[in-house]
Amino acid sequence: MKQIKILGLLITDRIKESGQTQKVLSDYAHIIQNRLGFHELSDKVCSRSGIIILQLAGKQEEWATFETALAAIRGLEVKEMTFTL
Image (cartoon, rainbow, N blue to C red; front, side, top):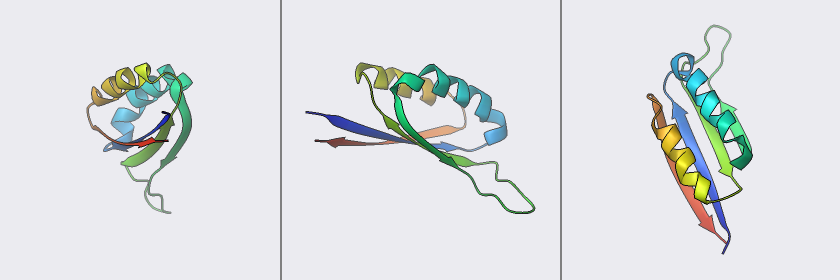
């Protein structure tokens, strides 16, 4: 059976956590099939929080290691969805 895994990341302070988050995302780029990120933006302010949606691919054995690396980042909340085809 094939699995599709989606991770949702809530970054509570993009200024503080963006560097470390980007490093982990780069380290595991080979298992990220799609990535969508967004944050609130207006003429006067750019939100400090942000959300990233990831669709994982590649070796499923690496998914848990990737999630552990993300969970170690302070100020980052990780949620997941898994679909089986």
